[in-house]
Image (cartoon, rainbow, N blue to C red; front, side):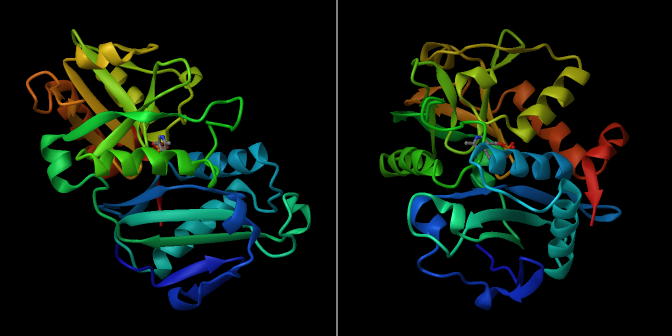
Length: 304
Ligand code: PMP
């Protein structure tokens, strides 16, 4: 991971080496924070941030879900993200806004702790590797189930809830796979540890509904729009493990992972064991949209 040069912390640009917090921060102990992951892309008009207002809105929705009061508006968060990309002199990269309870209380009621906001940005290449993007990755069904709405808010990006993703990712890597696919508590497919999942069968694209306990991904929504505008039929379908084994194609979407083909589930090759035509079309459309090459989707890009 490349290092950030400067981090925005509560109104100030701080050199990365000095962007530190107290060991007794409430968020460090109990996961009382919310975050976003956003990408900036190189375009002919300079660096541009992909679907920035959608990410800033989701950040504030996540904060509301966990009762964290935030003084900033969507527009103010948008501005900070642009400033941080510029201050780090990035042509492209990854932006990480974080809202968290810092000092003030080490009890489980964080109300008296200070709410702090930080935004970092740095260069981050393909999350599941260049090789994964080109040829697909190997996945397994996790022995861990995706967090349930009875205990967490699965549509929010709360820091503490990501221990569930960490367990699934660690298990996948330790057992020789690239990524995990989690079932929900009903035993249906939810998503990857940090990606949404799509399946292609008989040229129709299926993806689990939000009611399957997924994060309502912004890349997911973008790929649904790109493919359906391109004439591909897309359905939200409750999917089972067996549906994955029988798929013609599978792919993940996510800000970090972009569009990554899945070539294996539980040691079973998917389709021909290579990225299929609809997966490649999704990758191509997504790459063109993020590079500012498709006029119809220019409104998804915010210039820095
Ligand atoms: N699911 C989870 C659990 C995630 O952490 C992410 C990454 N934010 C996604 C799906 C993909 O969402 P997005 O496309 O908005 O990045």
